[in-house]
Length: 366
Image (cartoon, rainbow, N blue to C red; front, side, top):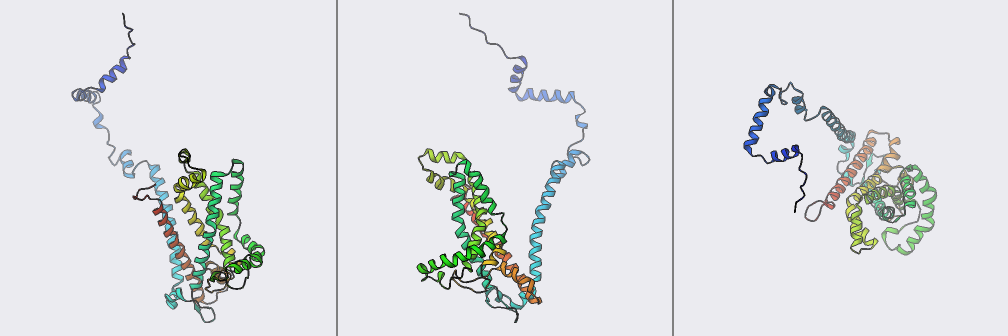
């Protein structure tokens, strides 16, 4: 029986396959032949010589365009850091008279008397921290629910227009929120919400006092509405970035839609969600106009949400144009420096929290 002969490979492929298995002796012979065929290779300029383009490229660390791009981006990054340092330096320099006059007592005093030049920052620090934290507590569950609905549950014909409407809330000027708070929200709180809360929870220190409408509650609600679209938009984008394989794997294991979101999607997106929370907290800390219009603007410390309050940003905005003496101006500048420090400190703590949450129990990244 005659066997069918298989077609042989071309000679070039056969030679290449044979040369691949040549020993070191044959490789040395090939190298010698190559150098004999090109005797002038040793006279070519080295890439590491200073006069050659290769030496210049090695000196610059690569291509000249890459080096220029790296230098420009480094300059821009340094400018951002220098701008932050310059702002802190100028505020600290303008605050020197107030620091020399009051010292650390300025942070713990509750007195504010421009006539006697006696000032304290504690009511404003208290109002800023309380209003921002309460606004975050109110806005975070709602914003997270909006983000989960838009990313996981909403049909396509609802997802896009509703997402645009949520993002438009962040584009509304703060003075519009303030006017809405004055004419709509404050009367509603005074006539319906606060009397009801006082009736059922008046025994607690948080709902005591006269229902005025204006006060810490109104400021917290306005801030919550203002930071809600920021947290919701960032959280939605983070949830949409979670790979679909994670969702499919959870559903394949028998998880319900709720279990899939709670146990698979949210743990993967928690670092990004915390980033959105940081952005919302930053806006709440620095918000001025809307809070000034509804918080009551009274420098006092009270645990009641019905009582008027004040914040660092609102006192600077409302008093800076009327400040007459040098010490008064220096005091307001020191309040700005304190607001700068509080914002920076809270952002550092939040970044550390993100870094900690983003790591596994064994120290590895998720």
